[in-house]
Length: 231
Image 1 (cartoon, rainbow, N blue to C red):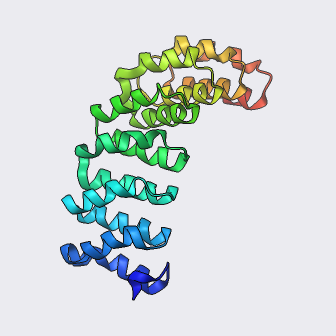
Image 2: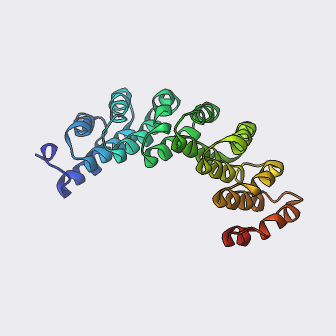
Image 3: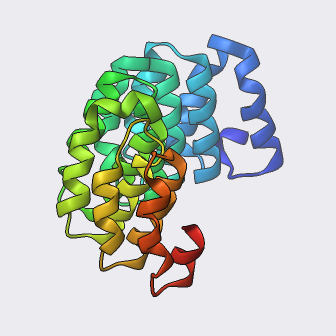
């Protein structure tokens, strides 16, 4: 029986067709979240997200603890689809997951929740894990104008975060959030990390403030060719 085998074509066809079966397919899909190989568990999570309902949401919450990162990723996206804002408290911890693919999925899903999701990402910026802070900053950049209210928080991180990866992510985020961020971006054009300087130069170019050309003169003399080219 396909419920007892791995990721074989017949099993995957059954899972792919389950969405059309609606409520009838749910018990099998929920069992698949526990019994199948990782690929099948991920597909079952995706389909349950499409079907929705309390039983699907409960199963997807449990799948957030799956040992496989891509299953947690699938469950994260599916839970955001099935439970909407009610899923936020379960998804916020995934924004600090050890695996980047899960963090990215959680961050993008949280952004869809609007202000409450943005606040969850801001809390993630306080995590001790630099990768978690980095992913949260990038997700806030993905939010664009919706993240305009947290620009001051990002400014503080750009000036003080000890991780160059985080500072680079923050500079990239500021390049996607409308507004004049020139003063602080100008300051990090002298950052010790060329990646941060590159991200700042690109962000200045994207936001195109009135004094951009003057400020970017500094980057034209940068020791790294990529930074000079970005200017």
